[in-house]
Length: 146
Image (cartoon, rainbow, N blue to C red; front, side, top):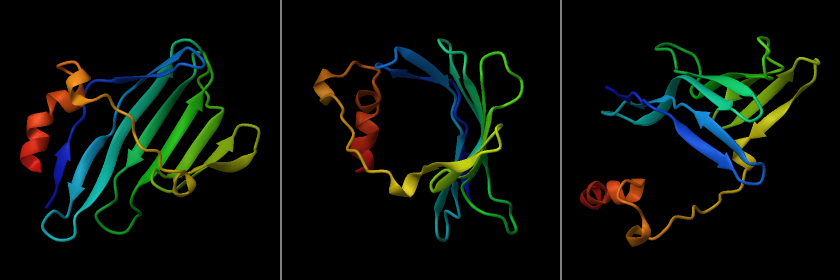
């Protein structure tokens, strides 16, 4: 009734304005109820680390229990350099509203993904991409799926 994809490896995101590089891992992906009304779910632990600042985050994507429970739940903790206690804890839904609870006692909306604008992605033309860039590498699969 479902299929899972275990993501291995890591990615790197660079914030050019701050000259910061973030190394991150990815959650597992699941296609649930594939014979009835399918839906997508993320699950597992991830991390985000910035070598320049030393800040890091530990993120857990919670899968929906078989009975009851909610879909798309996420919890996270954000740590300052060399601290073992988080200065911020986050919980909510990764495709909805996430709330932050700071060590100061302050509570706030961390992010509301439903209110974020959709930004059209910018990618180089296929002929301008290197052999191992995603769209070039998967072009035959994409063509055959279409």
